[in-house]
Length: 269
Image 1 (tube, rainbow, N blue to C red):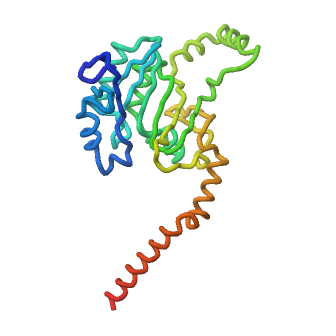
Image 2: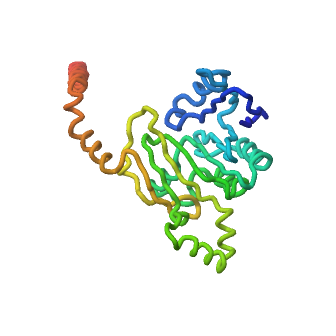
Image 3: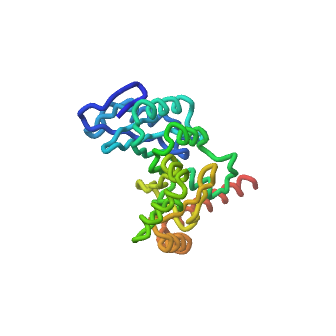
């Protein structure tokens, strides 16, 4: 692991954590994260050398995991940009692969809200990907949405069968410039994994096909949990069976609101 202060990985097991999501940071900022994560040396037998809300972790077989802090502005600041640019220049080889970790999946959120291209989030992060990390980003992982989904780029889906190698050789021979461009272009798989013990978000309400980034590249969802059928069923159960399964809570709310309305009416009288 390489930290913002030049720390290198020791022999002990280490633990690095991304910062909390936007919904938590609105009320708490980084106070709790700084107190219980950044200000601690050990957690459950794991060494915690992390001193910033972002990190770069070198894994085996030429893989890197980069954890970013998008804060409340939905983007990285200049200090993070310089840090990760320095890591990419001095540490990450041309043949290495990068996993990017953020706390919010803006590829889903921007597509769901049909955000204009000029107003997309993560402008500085995309600039970092297109320059210092160009052709190296293989996977992006985020949380915040409480379910699991995986999107893959449509153009990078591999062919199967005996025609795959033939088409690849033919395409490389007739269009060598496209073959070279494909090797230096980021087409990461996009994974949302935010089911860490919180309530469940439905998957059927999000589109199967999304447009990502300034180039509006096409992505398709190839996996999700719960699946769309189960998600729809749970949504109907939430509407019709919630009061049956939680009748005590509903009765308590009714009694509480009745008392509030009665007291307010008597006070005005």
